Length: 358
Image (cartoon, rainbow, N blue to C red; front, side, top):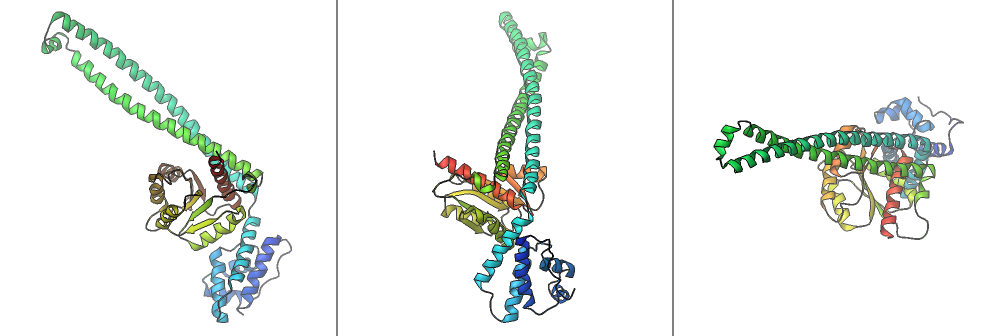
């Protein structure tokens, strides 16, 4: 573990270029791999794989290397050098992923959305049948009660005399009232199921467009010709995540606005009104993604800006349901797939351009 091993012949060009740049930085420290790993509390084998190009390091590892090199030289690493490595890193990230993997992710999301749509449709049918049954029973009870009321009018009897003559009237009224409450509950549940199905159908349409974007190469979904491109807002409290997303989305040639908190995101939305999409980390201190999303959706000016939640918690039903309830329209999990993220952003940009061209 003391010396750097030769680069393998099977590395792709992007991984090789990044590894060579990192090795040049590392060799200027004049340290063994084992010693540097101990300094940074990393596994020596992992550091070796980073420098051999067989494993892509997190950006934070590269940032730490810049810091150590600057400390060793006594001068800051130039901005040009950092930007060069950042560009190499973005290329290596792309090379490490593939459209095939992105398609797998999007197809799974499409299957999940389709399942929610079908389940909501079945639930809606069941609720509709139950609602029809209760409504018919109420109509039958109303008919019977109207007949009894007609008898009361005809015989000119007081209400207490009617109850004595027809001891089942109070029970019928109580049954009708219970059924009316149940009809209200079933109606609300049916509307919820119908809204859930409509939302799931919208997600299915969106995911099909995203799949088409990946299959056609992401940039191809954007309309051709000169026009003002909308911005992309990226919200994440981790600098390395912001850098990674910036590197991945730079190929879309849109202005990227990056902020590190929910409050900064709300301010950015006040300063600009041409965001095609917001990519927001769910887990942030002070104001998390759910709360920030709720604030955005409460503002008439920003309520229609689509929000993609970026989460390290997985996309389970509990988290996705809470996200959709808060107002998010899409999800992607960490570590994110570059092709999938670009496809999602490109589709929302295309939708923005379509709406603003009308």
